[in-house]
Image (cartoon, rainbow, N blue to C red):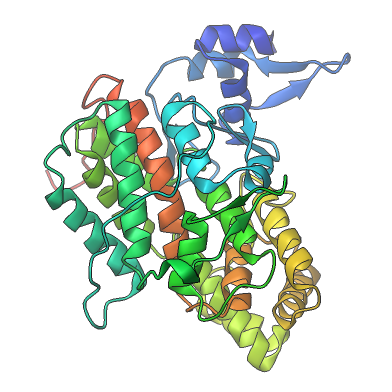
Length: 398
């Protein structure tokens, strides 16, 4: 078996070492270890991978992986970084707004004041997730410059759109929006996290809860090429405007296996609070193929995003009953299988502890991921248009 060093493998693929290790984390190429500890790769596998654009089957036989180079997010082992900055660190030290600008513009600049949006009245009976789609459509119709795909213009549209999404969820009275305190002691007014808390939570936050929500927004801002992000990139490849890109993302994230996953995890938690963890898991196993909120193929040893969010909740809430319920569910699951809670579970715990509606997780996820969708759109606008054109293998009647 002919082996290649990591440097040689990256050179053959025409990518950076970081991208090579991202391929490892996605299961696209296997890493071996030499006697001296160096990472080695099978030359045959690297050669097969060197054909750009060719999809390769993942470990799930029904799915395909497309290899798309990006400078935005690296998922490597149990570390997530945005443009070289660890996401878990950013969640404690910077606002979601600063991280969004990092993804869009490549710089982690100081905050420039609250983002301003235009609230759209939510029709009676319309849920929060649908409100985001209505607001996106209205914002697009009201922007005569929406066809401007220049980086700065897309970033400006993104700031206004995200602020509009949040402000359309509820009546925003400035005096009610809680401040955000970062780890260095800076207090920031008018943040997206504070406004989102006001829109979704029925009561004033306990210390640390707005900070936890800000961290959640940061951690969910991007996660490489999730299904909704791929949909956003395909739309951007066709040169759809930023609002249409977000619309493509929102349409995909509405799937029960994507953005709604935290809502199902929340249902398990609510059942556990009412009837106990064991009976709740019995119901869950009869309802879904697997227990919602557990397992993540990229993190077989545990989702670092979940670890951070649950840790911040413990710091903020101490012995709150919602954490006791969460621990009971985790313990019951671990007694049956060696799987760990993922970020959807942590988001479900957060919304339960904050007394938010049961579907609040999807709303938080969508607001956060809008930043990532637009970052990927900006990147895709710099590529050749219409580069996503897979061929179909016809299997019907001839």
